[in-house]
Length: 235
Image (tube, rainbow, N blue to C red):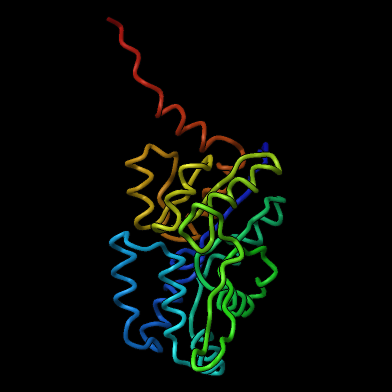
């Protein structure tokens, strides 16, 4: 197999993880008010960074409760194998998430994967009476997300090669417009289809693992480029 240089950026919540971590925490530990923030975000009145910062401030849980909850959350069963294959093929993979760094490290740590490079919001203890606070070390001016995935794409491009995004939802839309190819789940499938972004739909990392050799040898992208060519008329 002729290998083309690629960088992989991979979303966490709903992509690597089976469920959305912050949603599960809010359902269990959220004080009243987090639903209104969610509605404002979905309506476009606030960005995800403002939404999540407000929601995290409403979490009523001790660290022990947080850890116990996180220890009951799972990732896609094929993700460890996907990471192992990427490492064998010397293909860098970075987790880029608008979620919580502490949660991601703890969950991935159970699988021996907390060494993966990560860009995410930072969860930390707050000054009482608040218990938790959110900061966003990967935010960028003009971006309303906590983690600017477009900036992560730009950073990946500086190392050369092409960039693959693996994602599932709204936090991946902007970045999908800027990468060379997308493995898309859920809402990201329709976005890529509507925007004409080269992509393949996946249901999980078994599909991603199967597609990886064709991505790296260039055949997957070439196939989509051929399909994107306009038909030539004989008249």
